[in-house]
Image (cartoon, rainbow, N blue to C red; front, top):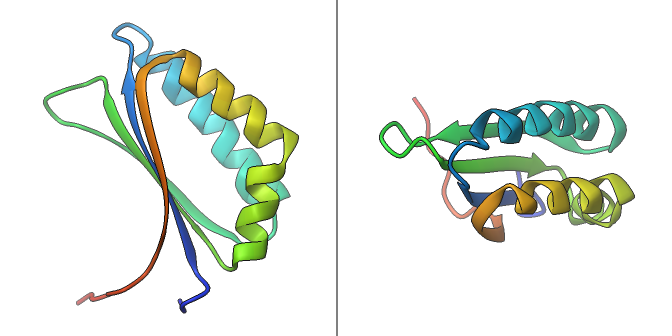
Length: 103
C-alpha cells in the first residue's frame, strides 16, 4: 500500500430493526463493488458488540481514480441512498494511510 491508497470509512447508526436488511444490502453491494470496479482490494463491515445497531464499513482502493470511479457509479449512489434510508445517522470519510504496522 502506498500514499495513493484510499480508505473509505462509514459509520452507520442503523434504525433498530433494520440491521439484517442493512447487512444483506452490504453483502450485495460489496460483491458488486469488488467484482465490477477496478482497484477495490477489500471491504469490511463490523458491528459493535454491545450496540447492535452500530456498524462501521471500511474499504481500500488502490488509487484515487479507482475510488472516484466507485463513488461516481450509479450503483454506489443508489446503494448509499438505500443504506442511508435504513439509518438514523451516517458519517462518511475518506482517508489515506499514515501508519501501517503488523506482526
